Image: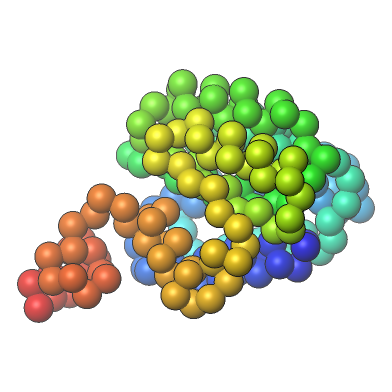
Length: 188
């Protein structure tokens, strides 16, 4: 499951269009040998860099220990303090043996950032209790969505997910999949 979760992040990173945006990568539920802290900032907040995000994934080599998603979301709030504009949070986990404290932490983020915030959850595995939890976390934001790793396993599935997370509401005048702001020929 750990390898699948890392691959989701790596594939998301490779599928992202070249955009100017701030990015943060934060882990939770990693092996204590990776860090004694149960959540760790491995990239950002910084300008998005495909190489930078890819390198940050190498810092987390093994999973293990508890999955303190609530703690990670509270720490993420500190990472987002200077953010402006829309905010997309993507959580990838098996959502197994995870405290329900993640739901109020997600709700607190929603209260603070309002409609600027969308939370997307991606489940690796098939834990029924985890499915309920990831849906509750994603539903804290009106634009949030709960998915399975199978939904983003194909190139087309990942492309749709990236488009939903990063480009929802952006204008694409010529319908080529590149938003006008990033399109060299927005009308052709």
